[in-house]
Length: 449
Image 1 (spheres, rainbow, N blue to C red):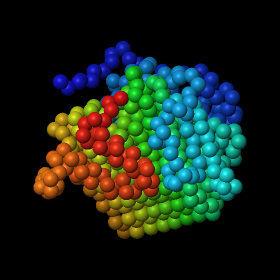
Image 2: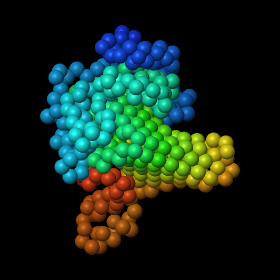
Image 3: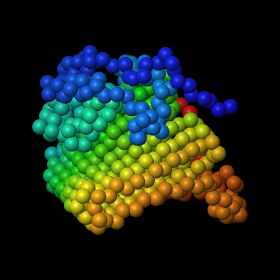
Image 4: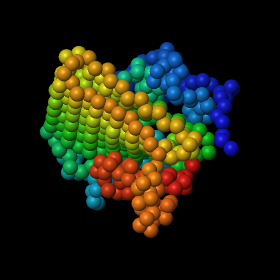
């Protein structure tokens, strides 16, 4: 029997926060940050909740969220590091890493920065500390250049009430070889709002992985997030963000990168968990010669809904963008990907590509892919594609003819579908973790948490 979602007629239609919540959160923060939060709150109160008449939201029905339950802050006293899965705490490469920051239920529980990296002038710290100790670096960048509070109701809510976050700053001409690692783990039910602010100055280089995950839950939870990636001229940033929330979590997040002249961004995303995921993922190529690649993988099962809205904006000539998303859905899950390549007038000789490959693994699953182009220049090469398919019988039969049981053969073919994206993740241990998650979903033993 298929479960049917019904709107909770007595549930509030928007998160239940007040100006008092903002003032209480910011009472010990710098004055500039407190004022910034209050301005965002005033904006939040004026903005409407998104509805089906909004193009970006018309395929996302979130009316079954009980905001009084999902929106309450997590209330787990004295969170500790030992609740985090050990696999998510291991060094990404070898025995060293540039630094690691771990949050549990929105609270900082572990921090480490490699001494050699610190001597390079790198700032890698929690966002609250950065706002206090590095105002000159944070204030001009925090939700002023990439994600902006007026972009929507949830963006304004995040700007007013973000609970925790990370600031990574790599100074001009500095190449950091060791990767950085951030873990945002929720052990209890409730709401958190995490923020990632990464600023890579001219001719600098860095790699960072962010894990979002949570323990099995009993009631609805909420995550409202923002990711800001600022890549300076001739800089190089590799950013990996992987999400595996429990099945009671609803995520609304805004993620945007700005890439300057001759810089390179390699952005990799993965979505496995959550009940409903609504993400805005945007890359703006602001300088001539800027190059950006966005790779996304997702696998929805049960009653999950993943809605991902991507944009590649060419704001300068001679820029190049490449986006590839691959996803699968089974059971009664639904996925939506809507992509757009945009170019401003006179932005000639740009090269933009986007594709979404979809693997439908059951009759009740639904996958929508909507590519788009908005080109205002005449000397460009921009292409897009969306494909849908089921599990191909020919390779399955071939493997079976070699003595491999059907279940194992189907698993191998499905894993092969994702291998191209797995290979783009620069950490072998993380690849192994993702393969295990994929296998659990494929064979139907994924934990419905």
